[in-house]
Length: 394
Ligand SMILES: [Fe+2]
Image 1: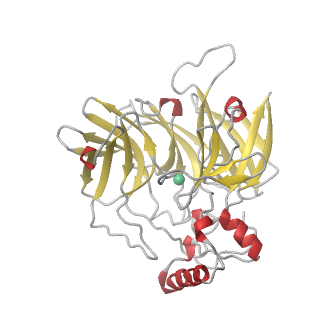
Image 2: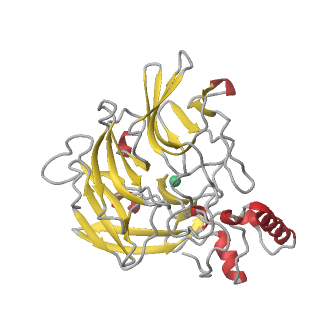
Image 3: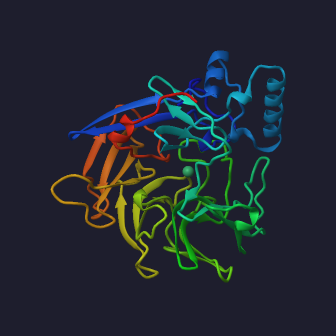
Protein backbone atom coordinates (compact mmCIF):
# COMPACT_ATOMS: atom_id res chain seq x y z
CA UNK A 1 0.00 0.00 0.00
CA UNK A 2 1.31 3.41 -0.83
CA UNK A 3 -0.91 6.45 -0.30
CA UNK A 4 0.75 8.50 -3.02
CA UNK A 5 0.58 5.90 -5.78
CA UNK A 6 4.05 6.76 -6.89
CA UNK A 7 6.33 4.19 -8.43
CA UNK A 8 9.76 3.83 -6.83
CA UNK A 9 12.24 5.82 -8.86
CA UNK A 10 15.32 4.14 -7.53
CA UNK A 11 15.83 0.62 -6.27
CA UNK A 12 13.31 -1.28 -4.26
CA UNK A 13 13.33 -2.70 -0.80
CA UNK A 14 10.70 -4.74 0.96
CA UNK A 15 10.93 -2.55 4.05
CA UNK A 16 9.89 0.60 2.17
CA UNK A 17 6.15 0.05 1.65
CA UNK A 18 3.79 1.53 4.24
CA UNK A 19 2.48 -1.17 6.55
CA UNK A 20 -0.95 -2.69 6.24
CA UNK A 21 -2.35 -5.49 8.35
CA UNK A 22 -4.29 -8.10 6.42
CA UNK A 23 -6.41 -10.43 8.51
CA UNK A 24 -8.60 -13.44 8.00
CA UNK A 25 -10.95 -14.38 10.80
CA UNK A 26 -11.78 -18.06 10.74
CA UNK A 27 -14.93 -19.02 12.60
CA UNK A 28 -17.61 -21.65 12.21
CA UNK A 29 -16.20 -22.78 8.89
CA UNK A 30 -16.23 -19.31 7.38
CA UNK A 31 -13.53 -16.76 6.63
CA UNK A 32 -13.93 -12.98 6.89
CA UNK A 33 -11.21 -10.74 5.48
CA UNK A 34 -10.31 -7.22 6.55
CA UNK A 35 -7.31 -4.91 6.39
CA UNK A 36 -6.09 -1.92 8.29
CA UNK A 37 -3.36 0.58 7.41
CA UNK A 38 -0.80 1.13 10.11
CA UNK A 39 -0.91 4.86 10.69
CA UNK A 40 2.74 5.29 11.44
CA UNK A 41 4.17 8.65 12.48
CA UNK A 42 5.90 8.65 9.14
CA UNK A 43 2.70 8.08 7.20
CA UNK A 44 0.81 10.72 9.19
CA UNK A 45 3.47 13.32 8.45
CA UNK A 46 3.54 12.47 4.75
CA UNK A 47 -0.25 12.49 4.47
CA UNK A 48 -0.35 15.87 6.17
CA UNK A 49 2.31 17.24 3.83
CA UNK A 50 0.73 15.62 0.79
CA UNK A 51 4.07 14.39 -0.45
CA UNK A 52 6.72 11.81 0.51
CA UNK A 53 9.09 13.25 3.12
CA UNK A 54 11.25 10.33 4.21
CA UNK A 55 13.92 8.71 2.08
CA UNK A 56 13.49 5.06 1.21
CA UNK A 57 16.03 2.29 1.69
CA UNK A 58 15.72 1.56 -2.02
CA UNK A 59 16.93 5.07 -2.80
CA UNK A 60 20.07 4.87 -0.70
CA UNK A 61 22.37 3.77 -3.46
CA UNK A 62 25.35 5.48 -5.02
CA UNK A 63 25.84 9.24 -5.09
CA UNK A 64 22.10 9.89 -5.63
CA UNK A 65 21.43 7.92 -2.46
CA UNK A 66 23.89 10.11 -0.60
CA UNK A 67 21.98 13.17 -1.83
CA UNK A 68 18.69 11.63 -0.64
CA UNK A 69 20.14 11.32 2.85
CA UNK A 70 21.46 14.89 2.76
CA UNK A 71 18.09 16.19 1.57
CA UNK A 72 16.34 14.35 4.38
CA UNK A 73 18.78 15.83 6.92
CA UNK A 74 17.98 19.29 5.55
CA UNK A 75 14.23 18.66 5.92
CA UNK A 76 14.80 17.64 9.53
CA UNK A 77 16.92 20.71 10.22
CA UNK A 78 14.33 23.02 8.67
CA UNK A 79 11.53 21.42 10.67
CA UNK A 80 9.62 19.91 7.74
CA UNK A 81 9.85 16.44 9.25
CA UNK A 82 10.30 15.06 12.75
CA UNK A 83 12.09 11.69 12.78
CA UNK A 84 11.82 11.53 16.58
CA UNK A 85 8.16 10.60 16.20
CA UNK A 86 9.14 7.53 14.21
CA UNK A 87 10.64 6.69 10.84
CA UNK A 88 9.50 3.10 10.32
CA UNK A 89 6.84 1.65 8.05
CA UNK A 90 5.72 -1.14 10.44
CA UNK A 91 5.37 -3.39 7.40
CA UNK A 92 7.51 -6.42 8.15
CA UNK A 93 6.19 -8.70 10.86
CA UNK A 94 3.38 -9.13 13.36
CA UNK A 95 3.74 -10.53 16.87
CA UNK A 96 1.36 -10.96 19.76
CA UNK A 97 3.19 -9.97 22.92
CA UNK A 98 1.96 -8.96 26.38
CA UNK A 99 -1.65 -8.91 25.18
CA UNK A 100 -0.82 -6.60 22.32
CA UNK A 101 -0.86 -7.20 18.60
CA UNK A 102 2.26 -5.44 17.35
CA UNK A 103 3.30 -4.44 13.84
CA UNK A 104 7.09 -4.36 13.53
CA UNK A 105 9.87 -3.05 11.42
CA UNK A 106 13.54 -2.86 12.36
CA UNK A 107 13.90 0.90 12.13
CA UNK A 108 11.20 1.89 14.61
CA UNK A 109 9.33 1.05 17.78
CA UNK A 110 6.41 -1.38 17.52
CA UNK A 111 2.97 -0.14 16.62
CA UNK A 112 0.21 -1.67 18.73
CA UNK A 113 -3.23 -2.49 17.47
CA UNK A 114 -5.87 -0.39 19.16
CA UNK A 115 -9.60 -0.48 18.79
CA UNK A 116 -9.60 2.35 16.31
CA UNK A 117 -6.01 2.82 15.32
CA UNK A 118 -2.56 1.28 15.34
CA UNK A 119 -0.39 3.38 17.60
CA UNK A 120 3.29 3.50 18.27
CA UNK A 121 4.31 2.31 21.70
CA UNK A 122 7.66 2.54 23.38
CA UNK A 123 9.71 -0.21 24.93
CA UNK A 124 12.87 0.20 26.90
CA UNK A 125 15.81 -0.66 24.67
CA UNK A 126 15.84 -1.95 21.15
CA UNK A 127 14.21 -4.88 19.50
CA UNK A 128 14.29 -6.79 16.26
CA UNK A 129 11.81 -8.47 13.97
CA UNK A 130 14.42 -11.11 13.21
CA UNK A 131 15.59 -12.67 16.46
CA UNK A 132 15.03 -15.89 18.31
CA UNK A 133 14.48 -16.62 21.97
CA UNK A 134 15.38 -19.95 23.48
CA UNK A 135 15.06 -20.98 27.15
CA UNK A 136 18.57 -20.55 28.41
CA UNK A 137 20.09 -18.46 25.72
CA UNK A 138 19.06 -15.66 23.47
CA UNK A 139 20.78 -16.12 20.18
CA UNK A 140 21.13 -13.60 17.45
CA UNK A 141 23.24 -13.95 14.38
CA UNK A 142 25.80 -11.41 13.39
CA UNK A 143 25.50 -10.01 9.92
CA UNK A 144 28.84 -9.49 8.32
CA UNK A 145 28.07 -6.33 6.42
CA UNK A 146 25.18 -5.25 4.32
CA UNK A 147 26.16 -4.14 0.87
CA UNK A 148 25.21 -1.53 -1.68
CA UNK A 149 24.48 2.10 -0.95
CA UNK A 150 26.27 3.09 2.23
CA UNK A 151 27.09 -0.55 2.96
CA UNK A 152 29.55 -2.87 1.33
CA UNK A 153 29.58 -6.64 1.42
CA UNK A 154 32.99 -7.96 2.36
CA UNK A 155 33.12 -11.63 1.35
CA UNK A 156 36.49 -12.06 3.03
CA UNK A 157 35.05 -11.50 6.49
CA UNK A 158 34.02 -14.40 8.73
CA UNK A 159 30.59 -14.70 10.30
CA UNK A 160 30.21 -14.40 14.03
CA UNK A 161 27.44 -15.83 16.17
CA UNK A 162 26.91 -14.59 19.69
CA UNK A 163 25.23 -16.69 22.36
CA UNK A 164 23.90 -14.71 25.28
CA UNK A 165 22.84 -16.42 28.49
CA UNK A 166 19.44 -15.26 29.61
CA UNK A 167 20.72 -14.80 33.13
CA UNK A 168 23.81 -12.96 31.93
CA UNK A 169 25.12 -10.30 34.27
CA UNK A 170 28.11 -9.15 32.26
CA UNK A 171 29.67 -9.34 28.83
CA UNK A 172 31.65 -12.37 30.02
CA UNK A 173 28.43 -14.35 29.73
CA UNK A 174 28.36 -13.85 25.97
CA UNK A 175 29.98 -16.59 23.91
CA UNK A 176 31.27 -15.81 20.44
CA UNK A 177 31.56 -18.46 17.71
CA UNK A 178 33.24 -17.69 14.41
CA UNK A 179 32.55 -19.39 11.09
CA UNK A 180 35.29 -18.75 8.52
CA UNK A 181 32.97 -17.93 5.59
CA UNK A 182 30.84 -14.83 5.07
CA UNK A 183 27.11 -15.43 5.18
CA UNK A 184 23.91 -13.57 5.83
CA UNK A 185 21.26 -15.01 8.12
CA UNK A 186 17.89 -13.33 8.04
CA UNK A 187 15.45 -15.89 9.44
CA UNK A 188 15.85 -18.43 12.19
CA UNK A 189 13.63 -21.48 12.54
CA UNK A 190 14.50 -23.18 15.80
CA UNK A 191 17.16 -23.46 18.45
CA UNK A 192 17.60 -25.78 21.40
CA UNK A 193 20.38 -27.29 23.43
CA UNK A 194 21.39 -30.84 24.24
CA UNK A 195 24.18 -31.19 26.75
CA UNK A 196 27.01 -28.91 25.71
CA UNK A 197 25.68 -28.46 22.16
CA UNK A 198 23.38 -25.66 21.07
CA UNK A 199 21.59 -26.42 17.81
CA UNK A 200 20.35 -23.67 15.54
CA UNK A 201 18.32 -24.12 12.36
CA UNK A 202 18.28 -21.07 10.14
CA UNK A 203 18.27 -19.92 6.54
CA UNK A 204 21.60 -18.52 5.41
CA UNK A 205 22.94 -17.22 2.14
CA UNK A 206 26.45 -16.49 0.89
CA UNK A 207 25.82 -12.78 0.38
CA UNK A 208 23.16 -10.14 0.66
CA UNK A 209 22.02 -7.15 -1.33
CA UNK A 210 20.11 -4.50 0.56
CA UNK A 211 18.93 -2.46 -2.40
CA UNK A 212 17.50 -4.05 -5.51
CA UNK A 213 18.10 -2.81 -9.01
CA UNK A 214 15.37 -0.55 -10.42
CA UNK A 215 12.60 -2.41 -12.16
CA UNK A 216 12.49 -5.40 -9.83
CA UNK A 217 9.66 -4.11 -7.71
CA UNK A 218 7.14 -6.81 -8.40
CA UNK A 219 9.04 -9.96 -7.71
CA UNK A 220 11.09 -9.01 -4.71
CA UNK A 221 14.12 -7.07 -3.65
CA UNK A 222 16.99 -8.88 -5.31
CA UNK A 223 17.84 -11.30 -8.03
CA UNK A 224 17.91 -14.96 -7.18
CA UNK A 225 21.60 -15.23 -7.87
CA UNK A 226 22.23 -12.98 -4.89
CA UNK A 227 19.42 -14.22 -2.69
CA UNK A 228 19.94 -17.93 -2.45
CA UNK A 229 19.29 -19.01 1.13
CA UNK A 230 19.33 -22.59 2.27
CA UNK A 231 18.28 -24.15 5.54
CA UNK A 232 21.30 -25.03 7.65
CA UNK A 233 21.93 -26.81 10.91
CA UNK A 234 24.45 -24.94 13.02
CA UNK A 235 25.97 -26.50 16.12
CA UNK A 236 27.83 -24.64 18.84
CA UNK A 237 29.90 -26.67 21.28
CA UNK A 238 29.96 -24.78 24.56
CA UNK A 239 32.85 -26.92 25.87
CA UNK A 240 35.23 -26.91 22.92
CA UNK A 241 34.16 -23.65 21.31
CA UNK A 242 33.81 -25.36 17.93
CA UNK A 243 30.93 -24.75 15.56
CA UNK A 244 29.67 -26.60 12.47
CA UNK A 245 27.39 -25.76 9.56
CA UNK A 246 25.50 -28.37 7.53
CA UNK A 247 23.08 -27.70 4.67
CA UNK A 248 19.96 -29.81 5.11
CA UNK A 249 19.16 -29.86 1.39
CA UNK A 250 22.11 -28.34 -0.53
CA UNK A 251 20.24 -28.13 -3.84
CA UNK A 252 17.11 -26.47 -2.50
CA UNK A 253 16.72 -22.75 -1.88
CA UNK A 254 14.23 -21.93 0.87
CA UNK A 255 13.52 -19.27 3.44
CA UNK A 256 10.83 -18.05 5.85
CA UNK A 257 11.21 -21.18 8.03
CA UNK A 258 8.48 -22.03 10.53
CA UNK A 259 7.88 -24.53 13.31
CA UNK A 260 5.17 -25.28 15.81
CA UNK A 261 5.86 -22.20 17.94
CA UNK A 262 4.60 -23.90 21.08
CA UNK A 263 7.89 -25.84 20.86
CA UNK A 264 10.11 -22.75 20.73
CA UNK A 265 13.32 -23.49 22.58
CA UNK A 266 12.70 -27.23 22.66
CA UNK A 267 13.89 -29.94 20.32
CA UNK A 268 11.80 -29.97 17.18
CA UNK A 269 11.59 -32.45 14.35
CA UNK A 270 9.81 -30.57 11.58
CA UNK A 271 10.62 -27.27 9.90
CA UNK A 272 8.40 -25.81 7.18
CA UNK A 273 9.68 -23.22 4.73
CA UNK A 274 8.98 -21.57 1.40
CA UNK A 275 11.12 -22.56 -1.56
CA UNK A 276 12.37 -20.00 -4.03
CA UNK A 277 12.15 -20.39 -7.77
CA UNK A 278 15.26 -20.22 -9.94
CA UNK A 279 14.02 -17.26 -12.01
CA UNK A 280 15.53 -13.79 -11.99
CA UNK A 281 13.28 -12.53 -9.17
CA UNK A 282 12.51 -13.67 -5.68
CA UNK A 283 9.35 -15.78 -5.83
CA UNK A 284 8.18 -18.23 -3.22
CA UNK A 285 6.72 -20.98 -5.37
CA UNK A 286 6.39 -24.00 -3.07
CA UNK A 287 6.29 -25.09 0.55
CA UNK A 288 8.82 -27.59 1.83
CA UNK A 289 8.77 -29.79 4.90
CA UNK A 290 12.09 -30.77 6.49
CA UNK A 291 12.45 -33.73 8.84
CA UNK A 292 15.41 -32.89 11.06
CA UNK A 293 15.55 -36.48 12.29
CA UNK A 294 16.07 -37.91 8.79
CA UNK A 295 19.56 -38.65 7.48
CA UNK A 296 21.35 -36.10 5.28
CA UNK A 297 20.07 -36.41 1.72
CA UNK A 298 16.59 -37.37 2.88
CA UNK A 299 15.66 -34.35 4.98
CA UNK A 300 13.04 -33.10 2.52
CA UNK A 301 9.92 -35.13 3.24
CA UNK A 302 7.31 -33.01 1.48
CA UNK A 303 6.82 -30.38 -1.21
CA UNK A 304 3.64 -28.46 -1.96
CA UNK A 305 3.38 -26.67 -5.29
CA UNK A 306 1.02 -23.70 -5.11
CA UNK A 307 -0.24 -24.52 -8.60
CA UNK A 308 2.39 -23.47 -11.11
CA UNK A 309 4.63 -20.54 -11.97
CA UNK A 310 1.77 -18.01 -11.95
CA UNK A 311 1.25 -18.54 -8.22
CA UNK A 312 3.44 -16.91 -5.59
CA UNK A 313 3.27 -17.67 -1.89
CA UNK A 314 4.97 -16.43 1.23
CA UNK A 315 5.51 -17.49 4.80
CA UNK A 316 3.35 -20.37 5.98
CA UNK A 317 2.35 -20.27 9.62
CA UNK A 318 1.94 -23.59 11.46
CA UNK A 319 -1.15 -23.92 13.64
CA UNK A 320 -1.53 -27.10 15.72
CA UNK A 321 -4.81 -28.91 15.27
CA UNK A 322 -7.10 -28.38 18.19
CA UNK A 323 -10.65 -29.39 18.89
CA UNK A 324 -12.49 -32.08 17.04
CA UNK A 325 -13.02 -35.65 18.17
CA UNK A 326 -9.32 -36.62 18.14
CA UNK A 327 -6.57 -34.96 20.16
CA UNK A 328 -3.52 -33.62 18.37
CA UNK A 329 -1.27 -36.53 17.53
CA UNK A 330 2.33 -35.77 16.65
CA UNK A 331 4.31 -32.61 16.11
CA UNK A 332 3.14 -32.10 12.53
CA UNK A 333 -0.54 -32.66 13.25
CA UNK A 334 -1.78 -29.26 12.22
CA UNK A 335 -2.22 -26.79 9.41
CA UNK A 336 -0.11 -24.39 7.41
CA UNK A 337 -1.81 -21.06 6.81
CA UNK A 338 -0.57 -18.83 4.02
CA UNK A 339 -1.52 -16.36 1.32
CA UNK A 340 -1.07 -17.28 -2.35
CA UNK A 341 -1.24 -14.73 -5.12
CA UNK A 342 -2.22 -15.46 -8.72
CA UNK A 343 -0.02 -13.13 -10.76
CA UNK A 344 -2.14 -13.62 -13.89
CA UNK A 345 -5.58 -12.81 -12.49
CA UNK A 346 -4.15 -10.57 -9.73
CA UNK A 347 -6.29 -12.41 -7.16
CA UNK A 348 -4.99 -13.42 -3.75
CA UNK A 349 -6.22 -16.39 -1.78
CA UNK A 350 -6.05 -17.49 1.83
CA UNK A 351 -4.93 -21.11 1.72
CA UNK A 352 -4.79 -23.81 4.38
CA UNK A 353 -2.67 -26.93 3.85
CA UNK A 354 -2.44 -30.10 5.92
CA UNK A 355 1.02 -30.03 7.52
CA UNK A 356 1.03 -33.78 8.18
CA UNK A 357 0.04 -35.15 4.78
CA UNK A 358 1.60 -32.21 2.92
CA UNK A 359 -0.93 -32.78 0.18
CA UNK A 360 -0.86 -30.19 -2.63
CA UNK A 361 -4.64 -30.10 -2.49
CA UNK A 362 -5.42 -27.56 0.23
CA UNK A 363 -7.80 -28.15 3.10
CA UNK A 364 -9.30 -24.77 2.28
CA UNK A 365 -8.78 -22.07 -0.31
CA UNK A 366 -10.64 -18.76 -0.04
CA UNK A 367 -10.43 -16.12 -2.75
CA UNK A 368 -10.02 -12.68 -1.21
CA UNK A 369 -11.60 -9.43 -2.41
CA UNK A 370 -8.28 -7.62 -2.06
CA UNK A 371 -4.77 -8.30 -3.37
CA UNK A 372 -2.48 -9.22 -0.49
CA UNK A 373 1.20 -8.48 -1.14
CA UNK A 374 3.17 -11.69 -0.98
CA UNK A 375 6.41 -12.59 0.74
CA UNK A 376 5.67 -11.09 4.13
CA UNK A 377 5.49 -12.56 7.59
CA UNK A 378 2.25 -13.78 9.08
CA UNK A 379 0.81 -14.78 12.42
CA UNK A 380 -2.11 -16.74 13.80
CA UNK A 381 -3.73 -15.48 16.99
CA UNK A 382 -6.49 -17.47 18.70
CA UNK A 383 -9.67 -15.52 19.39
CA UNK A 384 -9.27 -15.98 23.14
CA UNK A 385 -6.01 -13.99 23.00
CA UNK A 386 -7.55 -11.23 20.93
CA UNK A 387 -10.31 -10.89 23.50
CA UNK A 388 -7.68 -10.23 26.18
CA UNK A 389 -6.00 -7.46 24.23
CA UNK A 390 -4.70 -4.44 26.08
CA UNK A 391 -5.74 -1.35 24.14
CA UNK A 392 -4.32 1.16 26.59
CA UNK A 393 -1.65 3.51 25.30
CA UNK A 394 1.71 3.60 26.98
FE1 LIG B 1 11.77 -11.37 7.61
